[in-house]
Amino acid sequence: MIPCQRSLFDLPDDVAYFNCAYMSPLMQPVVAAGTAGVARKARPWEIVPADFFAGPERARGLFADLIGGAADNVAVIPAASYGIATAARNIPIARNQRVVVLAGQFPSNVYVWRERTRETGGRFTTVRRPGDGDWTAAILDAIDDNTAIVATPNCHWTDGGLIDVAAVGGRCREVGAAFVLDLTQSLGALPFDVAAAHADFAIAACYKWLMGPYSLGFMHVAPRYHEGRPLEHNWMARAGSEDFTALVNYRNDFQPGARRFDMGETANFHLLPMAIAALEQLHAWTPAAVQATLADMTGTIAARAAGLGLIASDPRLRAGHFLGLRFPGGPPDGLLDRLAEARVHVSLRGDSMRVTPHVYNNAADIDRLIETLRASL
Image (cartoon, rainbow, N blue to C red; front, side, top):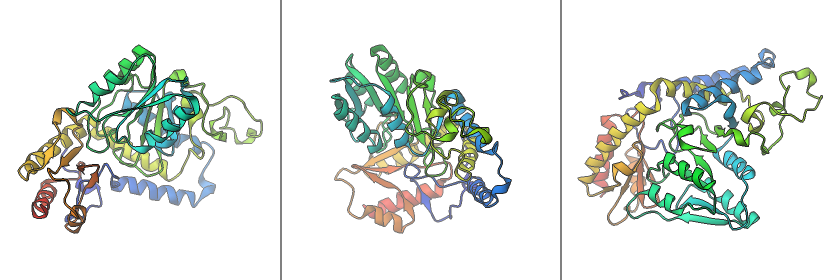
């Protein structure tokens, strides 16, 4: 269990922020790294060619270690949608083959597959929300020999409904389907092993549970796709780009591994240092300890909310860092406004009030949430 880390964040005592699934606050060392990066760009004569590559390689390695992978398999990307579009460009879909997604899945992992199935004559298949809350069983039932791609998160973004990615990935291997994972709502707070999941592409934006900046993310690409087609052709992704004097000796070959899929301006001198600082802190905490800490917190909130008549999903079927609370008659009108007036911050997603704490929350925050709910019902 991680003791409260509020001192690392710029969180006033009277703010109860239970909305990490929307956007994490930045730790003070992360802000400092970004500020230093901006100041560094103000003095470009101090930036040498090697600096363009040092930051991306450090970040790549930290991300790889977080998922039990190899740095050569990691690309630096600007957003989850960029990574999913890269996967869609490189995984073949034959006519009438199926792409499987979840009902109510986040749009970035839906639109691209709808478009690709229209282009290829494939079939877009949505797994309906299971009545018993068991997403894994429902997904496994939807996979057959005609499945080309399964594209899911590790947990559902509305209420944290948990998916056994090792079981799903194993089934994908059995039928020859590709497995594309959007880990934006889990990585950093939920342990993940990319090998155990048999993931072809595993993608995460930084600005939620990776505790980093907006407009930056990472993508793990299985080695069988390393000869694939990138979305863009930037100079850094080409072999030999470390030698600035020879950049006009145009090359057809790429940097090794997944680096060909890197976004342009990979060296981003203010965002990458922020991501590195955040990843270093996550390594110090460990995702397992974060998960244990947040599961204890959401369990406490669920128990106290039950006394108000709110309904929480089975803790065995949701990720511990997520809590979806449902109201028997639906969310009361103006609920979010009343909570915000009390400086309590949550989200409404679908028919759930999404409560997503982190290690900056404390017992006083939980008291504020419960008492404000009591007064609002």
